[in-house]
Every structure is written in C-alpha cells, then in structure tokens.
Length: 310
Image (cartoon, rainbow, N blue to C red; front, side, top):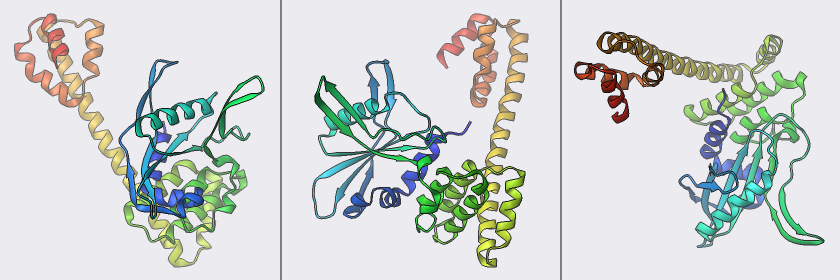
C-alpha cells in the first residue's frame, strides 16, 4: 500500500519554500525563508469521534521586515471526505488557541476522482445570518492542467505534475516531462531520487505506455537523455536495495519464529492459540530475547509472564 501522506509530507517538507512559491505566490513574495521552522506533531482529539487526529504539517515563519511569526498549516487529503471543511476549522481553532498567531490554512487534494471542485470554506449559518465564514486555500491537483506547470523551474512542479489532470494518452509524455524538468534543476542526488521516486510511484506505466516513454526518451538530446536514464536507474537501484534489506529482515524474523516455537513446544507443550499469536507478532530481536529466556521457562504461565513484562 502506498503511504500517500508520507510521500507528500516528505516532498513538501524538503521543498517547502518552492511549494509556497508555486502555489502561494502572494505569501512567497514577502516570506523570510530563513525563518521557516517545522513544528513538532500537533495532535488533537476529535471530540465528536473520540479519536486523536494529527495535523499533517505546521510551519512557523515570518514575513520579511516583521518580528511577529505566523503559521502555515498544510493538510494533505488523498481521498474525498464529508465535512472536510469542518475538520480544517477545528484544526485552525485549536492551533490558534495554542499559538495565538495568524494561521494560513492550505489543503492539497491529491485523489484522482471525483473531479468536482472541492469547497474552500466552512460556514455556519442561523437562518439568514452568516455566523462564521472560515476559508482555506484549496489546491485540487486533478483540476490543474500539467501543461500549465511544465515550464516552471520548480522541483514541486516536477513532482506534482504526475498527480494533475492528465488525459490517458498523455501519461507517458507527462512522465518524461516531469523527469526532463527535474534534470534542469541541479539538485543533489538525494533530492533528485525523492522526486524521481514520487513520479515513478504516481505515473507507473503499462507496457504500451512504457514503449511510448522509451520512444520519447530516444528523441531527447543525448546529455538530457542520459541524465533522465541515470535518474531512473538510481531510483530503481535504491528501491531494490530497500526491498533486499526488508526481505533479509523478514527472513530473519521468520527463521527466529520457527526456532522459538519449536523450543517452546519442547519446553511447555502446545501453546494456546492466543499465546502463539502473541509470539508470532514479536520482532526478530524480541524473539531472540525470548529464546535466551527459555532456560528459565518451564510452564505456559512462565510464557504469559514473559510476554506481559517484555
């Protein structure tokens, strides 16, 4: 499963100044970039649902020539949600109560459908009286044309074009344009991999599209073509290494689990299903600790005690 919130948060955190420049030019014009500070997680309890909720990104900053700080709250929404504006207002109210500074609320809607325009406000009315008119800046990617951003020399544009309004016949071309733009930005290798990975995640091509992409790639000037190929090779190599490390960890855990369960069976007999389930959920390191403790375990009660005190 793709962790959409993590991908978007990593992109915006890494390129926050460029994000503001692209989508909030009226703020960027006077933003003191040296003042930008990412605040710790802001967790609130939803009093109606009784569940904790975490604001995606809260940034403290100043405008040039001013001493007072303000907050920019950026929320990412990967799926449509009823009464989303009410949720944004609750975040705003609690952030304002805690920090007592102006807050600029922003939402990025990144889902593919529906295409209808999302509201950018939350209102409370009593008959004909407007009691509250709370507004936030809405960025709905599936209503933005990638063609309007292809000439922006901006890493956020290079990444987010992959989630904008794209006609099916244009998918291969857009992926190539995203990566072509990336090659012009002169970023370090880690940031290039972040963007190329983002694009590859959201513009995974089928066989026919991949053939079209390769044809377009061959038409690029040789230096640009080589750079695009280098970007994708680096991204895929990193992904393979992460997969290899994950596979090694999973293999270690499975081997340790099998060994410990056999020893437990020899020491205390067959485990009740609930205890076997608890043991199977232990990490590889915890299983090794349990294996070391087996010399002092002689009964099922000892197993329960160890699990309760680990």
